[in-house]
Length: 137
Image 1 (cartoon, one colour):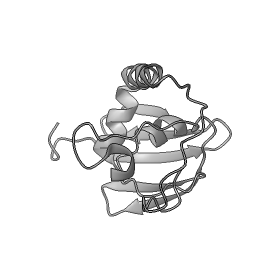
Image 2 (cartoon, helix red, strand yellow; image 1 turned 90 degrees about the vertical axis):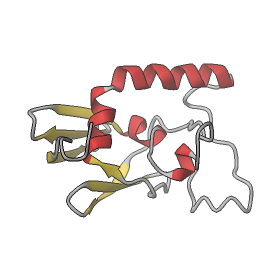
Image 3 (cartoon, rainbow, N blue to C red; image 1 turned 90 degrees about the horizontal axis):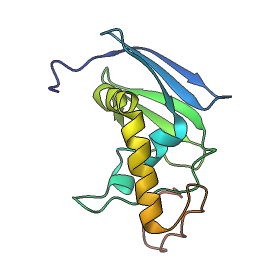
């Protein structure tokens, strides 16, 4: 999908009680993306790493909430999560990706958890003192 052909978000609704971000797009698509899915697949370097194979498996995010949602230009939003994570910038194309591929992404997440021998409620390991994680867990 190229930038020029990427759908644009036309509506964003934060549903705090059900912990989902509802996103409507100009192509008619509408998705309800769980906060947990957004958090474990954050596009930030802290989660994705700085290169292939460097992604950090996120755990303990089932009950994470979005406490703030800030616009980034006309192309993205930057959520602040209740665990302090706020460095991910979610472009409209990335939100569309998360929304349209939820089933596959959940399966991939569950596979990675199983490979690591943990469940999704396991606490995140304590970061090293010099990790520079900006308070994220």
